[in-house]
Image (cartoon, rainbow, N blue to C red; front, side, top):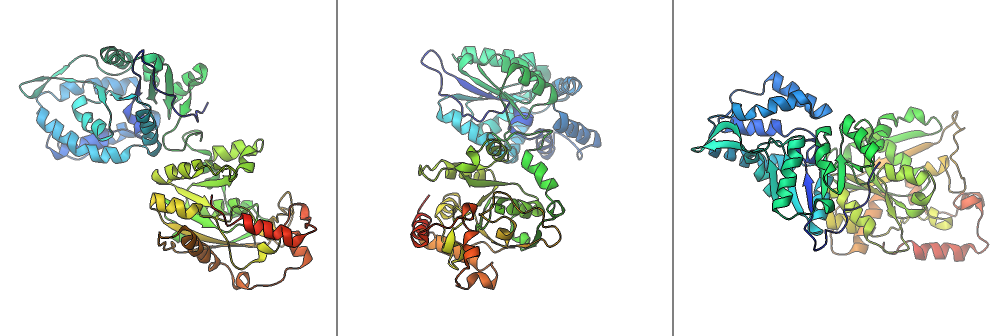
Length: 491
């Protein structure tokens, strides 16, 4: 089960509510251990470089999560730290806070912020020693930490554990005690964790969430109907065996699987390999999103595609598009929600793809050398401060014209060529949405072949291919005028 809903409003006056987050494999994709160990080495509390045994242990943890033997070893950490200076450990924690903060999964911060806005207390509950993790919690704006505390004497650790070893049932007891002290209503609270050993913790709150669950946690969450979420992909996007559907499709998306069209791709090196960006392309065919997907498969990056609501509302197809991380756009409402969702994706360091024309132009507009676009991409780039990368598509209408319900998959002997060209990021002036949109559309036009920039009269057959069902309206001038008036508007 996948939860795509936002956290509910905070508890009533009967008591405060909280959102409790595990750390390793929940807020982080893996273990915090390597970063903390490096910081401890820097202050001189650990010697030498990372051992092969340590690397293997962290690797196993990242792959399958907590195990009873690994946590038994963790419990002995208090003895291993005996004699360590508390001041030096806290210095190491300060040093580790920034790299740990950078390692927090992108969509975790959005969930944290939603709970903060709802007025909930934010609590980090982790087995990791409190002195090592509190600076990270403070950097994330958490209100408190429930973590294992090592016993101290005269400024040094004495080898004991002060209170609960915050793991398994011990973690649930520690959180319950914290909630009692702070007058927090657990029935109105949330808890997030990946580990089967945190089932006791998730069981004491009213809103449990399994995050990137290990196999046993997934089984429990399925049986108990607990929502399953992933903080490295947008809300509503599932994962299977650790992979989101789009990642799987990217691995499978090879041109050889589309023998009824040839791809001519150039400039793919201009697509950022890391970090956020907005891909903008012209729209000529229903198959254009697949063509963009094949471009991204070559690059090796998923993309969040903004698409019109009709696609998302279609049976089966709509569910697939959502699972692939698509963003639904209903132009009729004028809502900013799609742009906000796209902003979230960009803030998470992802690529967003848009077709500023909004729809495939019909009739004479399809052959107009001057591309006309909406302002959405420019508004988004201005708000997020990210580059806009133009993509010119040509020939895709030969594979799947607007007049056809399905692509022509039988033409394998003489498949049409779909030309894809990627350009340098567009230099936006951020003074006028209209002027910057024209710059974007001009950049796309310059990537098209010379014939695209020549004005000509289309044949009757060519016009028919630009209309659904191949039916040209009786009053072509009026239909073309209506289309032209509708397309250049704002989102």
